[in-house]
Length: 541
Image (cartoon, rainbow, N blue to C red; front, side):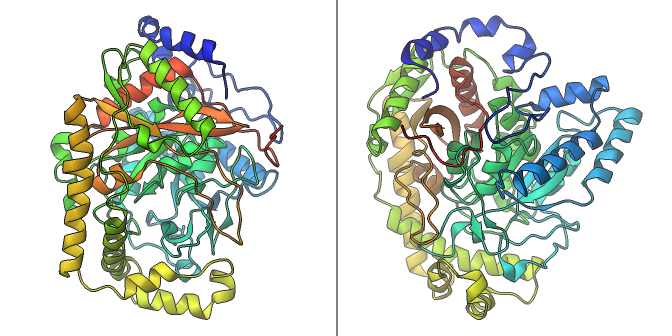
């Protein structure tokens, strides 16, 4: 763990005093960026741990240009992702990025900045379509030569905000929905991504490349996607803040899907402030995604108003103890996190257990199989005409040595056997999921204890990557929010033998602002995040 109990408690007690700090400190930043000391396995890098605000200030002052920043990050990817530590988190870089950045520099000089993301280098997951020279493949060799005919809504929003998309990140192929024995972070096109804290450890979840790359400082911020755990798990395992939004806050159009009832894109960043800034840029109504219609009244273009260092004061936080117990050291970290929140003024209700835990897992799996077949075929018809789920199964069988050297495609085959979304079995499974995750689950828990949010361990420390046996997932808490379509925010909470562990704040639909306030106050009270060291293996003694 990063700090001892006494220091952890002391920092929690200081949270209220931080509200009187200057604005740049309120954002959790230094007035002038000072990179952390050199770490084992990593050469010094000027932009290590730098924030969006510091990059923006640097461009405004003339210290940096967007083009210079873009080129610095691209060099760092060459040095540490493709060479050096070989994190292998970026599947492809954008050859147009320097020119795009230069155009944004010219626009800044002539018209001023569009907003806080103007000129900021960003990495996005390789299931998010971009109408440029980069591919959108979900890591699959079957789509390795497919270029999108148009931008996804997420890519379009980033470009409108002035962000520079410098590349695509590797992922668990097909967002980890191909096999029941998959290896997180592996794709046929991209190979295996490694955890930058300890390189023989797994980066977790399908947004593994985004988690590893942003933690390793290969871009300012990144975008992942989640169906169940794929933003929050890689954020936790890679020492990041991850926001899994309410389904519909961020458009899914142009994103290779699994489930239209659970899928969402979300920010992954090194600070809550940066995650909040990115979330504001991503939100917005999209005529091509009907689920975004409510975001007109619920979404915000700027979430910075929620960044209050005393945001835990008076908040009612429940502790869902029935998600504890899978790792004693994780429990210890969580208990210290809860003590820090209490010291920062939170009202802790412990226990506040989710009564329906584990009761809708089978129904969720059935829903995902039905929706994957329907949603993927609909996406392919628009973005990769001529391809279908059936043709992908055939491709994988014909290219078994390259696509299935470690695990097969049981989920593809199971989904292909499912009927249409009019099937009564699908409708019954979906109704069960919503009843148990929403009405009798999260909504009931919040109402019973009058909670602002409840907390759980996001997951355990990263396991050793095992290509022969697959993932060794030990525990986590992403499923209730995922199935309900509700938001969850994970924040670094501690370390176990150098491996990060996160805490999740979860609440009801459209509560992103409230969760950001709680997460930010916790982050400011504890300051757990530290840059990865690219160690070859964990020091267990």
